Length: 187
Image (cartoon, rainbow, N blue to C red; front, side):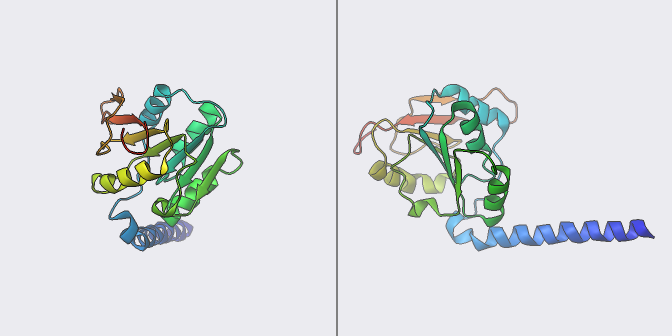
């Protein structure tokens, strides 16, 4: 008899989680345009980290940081200041909880379109192709020369990549594009 109550509680908990997840996705749908929070695979994160050489104290911004795993990896490997922008409430709270006690990481519950990105030494994004043109304009107007932009899966229109890597993985081998801002008018 007790196992029936345990099963009912388990199903109730899963149902409640699904409701919370659905509400958090629907609440931000006008901003995300249908993009869902999906964790970046470790092999992709490691490929990005291996391709970069950063110094302690530099600032990395993750646009749509999800659970913050990319930020934590950057902070651990390089000792950088890692700032993530996330508007999905569930992903935001997950990132905050997983990053508790990790110095140099800040998670902002903010739409990155409303943020000033000029403090970045590195920008990381894994966004849908339909927002990349708008992102190009924002990055060109706000970033300083020398800023590195890393885009997973989708090219950044109007920028010429300095490097394109393909992680060695059968499931996660989509391209990762690396750009460097030359000046505010051209790249």
